[in-house]
Length: 340
Ligand code: 5GP
Ligand code: MN
Image (cartoon, rainbow, N blue to C red; front, side, top):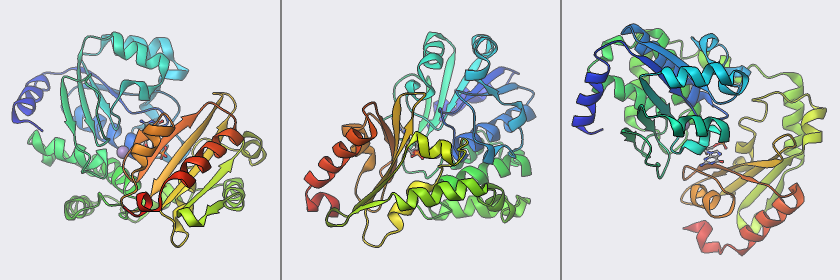
């Protein structure tokens, strides 16, 4: 982050402010962890922070400290719009373009004239924020929040509560320390958090060992639906709305299922296609191993984006047509593209 930006932000934060903190729509562990870490940090300095999520966050994150204070734009539009209008300062975390909050909230954000601060690790950030700390080298926004607090010379303010939020995002966005953005620094930060008393062995259990029986059955269905395009080192699976309904789907149930497609030996590209009848879209998650760039793939073909090895997108045609399009593109990709 630029020194002059840090100085300017220090000045902004020198007096108590009303501060809105916003993650992307469909917030994940990193989005919730980073926004709540910043929330607890700002509380310590007598600010009035509020985390506003565009839509509901998943149940498996509801144990995060402070999550009970989170406002959900979609559920409480008038109140959230008022909070945004009255805020002195707005942080947007873990996303890079205003449309990632959804149409209606995007309109509200676009109409505001306050100072925006973006902290994010996605590629190609849009130009809406006054201060931008954007770096795709980081595995998580939570790791950047740790750095941001350090830049402000306030590392001593990181306590178990803030550390728990930061640890959660580092853990979830790194695929439990497996993904390429995981560095020595990531582990050094985690070591410091553990020394502080962050419950590092309980957090994975809180996050990952809380499935319902029907969620495991839904996973079973997704695994049975999986197709492998061996020649093209690709796999994919699908879940229709009927299947989701049959297994009593609740938000968060499909989280992580996409990764199974990459665990097949020799597979470099995988995808999961999830029907959402209410939104009339097929939501897609892409994952890759090595140099295959799913961010570019999602941008080029499926109106999405993300990171090189983890991205998402959507399709507005039927499941069958979407799959056909995916298969056509993948089978047309040359072998070298997969290899490169
Ligand atoms: P997931 O597949 O876990 O939903 O998302 C993987 C990554 O891609 C995340 O960093 C997420 O923010 C990003 N992503 C998911 N869906 C979209 C999308 O529709 N557009 C863009 N630009 N990024 C997405
Ligand atoms: Mn993230």
